[in-house]
Image (cartoon, rainbow, N blue to C red; front, top):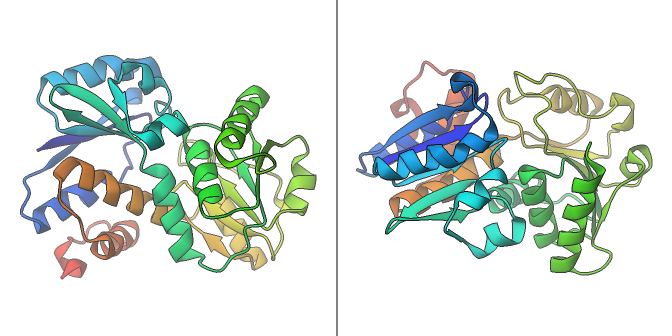
Length: 289
């Protein structure tokens, strides 16, 4: 079974070992390849030709990551209801010659938050980033019952468009595009970061450190590195923190199920992820049995 990942700067991705090891445990022959836009020197729009090549080569499916989650939409034949609602795709499955887009990011985030920070308050949550990851995170928060989500993005128009789409799905007053970040964070119960800032290629904090406080829980979607500057800074203040690992694993669990038609062991994949992020040289067998 041929699968893979399309995105930029994906060299450090742990998706290949996660998928391949779990497939081996389930008796499935699976290869998971990386198609890095940066390695080929091509823009996000190259996702279309890459999809076509993969389909012709007999691939079962592909994961899609930054910066292609929204660009890929025009190259698909069909969208799952979740992907259509979010206008973002992170998993493409080839079925009977058709490319079908799915979104496992929102449910992966929701499951990660529910299990990693099970009792945090969700009255008001600030989301940084209105791209594909931000859309998934905001949808997940509102599905979990968040009272209100305020979306911030460097592109005000994109934040406004996401807030409008969320309002259409969840009702008036549930989502808005933020205008004053300091005031919104001061009034919030939690903060979710959904931009590339903090990745190895994009180091730094996505907001001024002075806006963080001990009673503001913080969730991160970046997982390479697992301890981003945001995670480290918030944790040092005494805030409750959820790193990007759980979202990464749980979205992979659902994507694997779509590819293989078999239910993976989420606990085993979490344990494997923990090993990969602490001792990459260790083999899956060290912890999976």
